[in-house]
Image 1 (tube, helix red, strand yellow):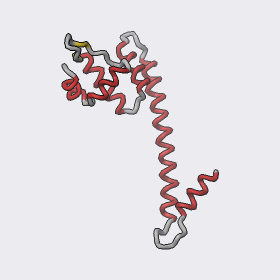
Image 2 (cartoon, helix red, strand yellow; image 1 turned 60 degrees about the vertical axis):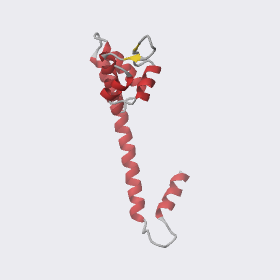
Image 3 (cartoon, one colour; image 1 turned 135 degrees about the horizontal axis):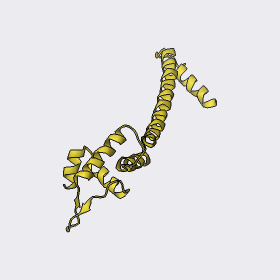
Image 4 (cartoon, one colour; image 1 turned 45 degrees about the vertical axis):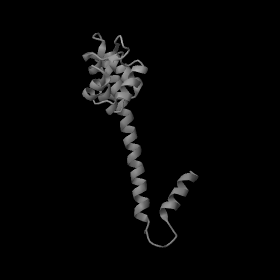
Length: 131
């Protein structure tokens, strides 16, 4: 398969595929003409990477997961450790976003939104910066 074929089948843009090749996540063969020739195993790796990235795993986490995926002697505990750490990070980010939403909701609800110059949103933001 050429890069266009593997891009269409994996759902990844060619630029991303080239990047994954540049950083060593995939290693397609090269034809005599120098063009990339992707195998089914490359397509499978790219699909794996696309799914992992869509779940927010970092490139380094993807590298580690891919290495574990390819290691038939792997311990599932190693995979679980990576996924659990990532889940903890997602949970932390969600809590931060919920706190941001709650604060902003309070500020927006306190603002009358009329022609008067006083604005609880600006007051609240100036207090937050003073902490």
